Image (cartoon, rainbow, N blue to C red; front, side, top):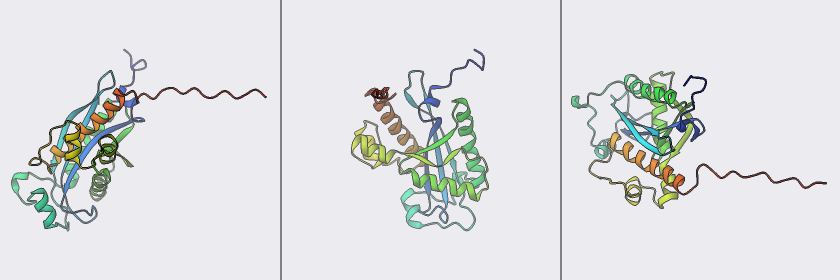
Length: 221
């Protein structure tokens, strides 16, 4: 099939030309301008010819605290991350984000999408840290939409009546281990499974594609 006759990937037709990419970050606090980004995971999604959304590859990077970063001990205790442990094989923000962004940009192109949109559980938190780090690192080619996100906490509240990731996963029939939680890769993969499950369930119930509504006829005068 020639490029001119090539059909667009079904994923490009589902979210207004956006490619959803699930992201989770582990940090040394809640302030993206001040507190260190320590770990980031991005889970790519794919879609089959019938429109069912699936989890794809996971990309993870350990990040060195930026110069002058604040490290809240309570946050480090919560995540269990030792920022100075050499076994983390952490890299500077610019290198780490570049490694995360590269496969996302390739996926955007492969799936005929316009750009990526960040999916996260309480997505604003992850979005703010990713964009603050990209700005510090002077990364020009950030693949994510600058303000739009898909928030699985909101979606899970609608679909399952619960906004906590662990509880929403259990209600959705997705196994969840509290011992493995609070690693960026694990949380991102569970968030991806939750997001795919909600999107697919909506399709299964007949919610997508939406029914075609015929415009009302204007009465003859």
